[in-house]
Length: 69
Image 1 (spheres, one colour):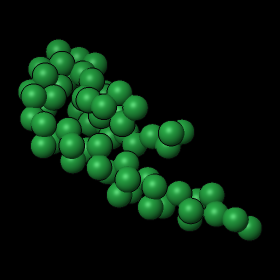
Image 2 (cartoon, one colour):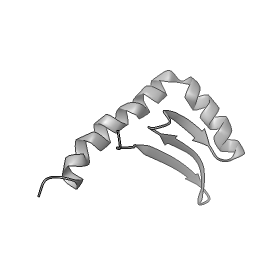
Image 3 (cartoon, one colour):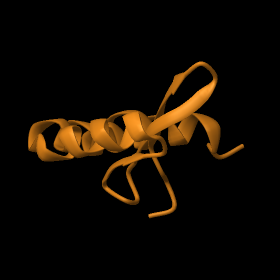
């Protein structure tokens, strides 16, 4: 439960949208980001794919970073 996958998108060094596995959806931080988040959150396959990244990327590599010495 304490493992989190997040993916942020930036334009001109400003974060405008982020996916957070704890929230389970895209969140927009600018006008452009809010519009894109609304569009992406309607696509259930996109949301399912991003949620799967937590298991594919994070849980698969947690043993490498926090393995037993």
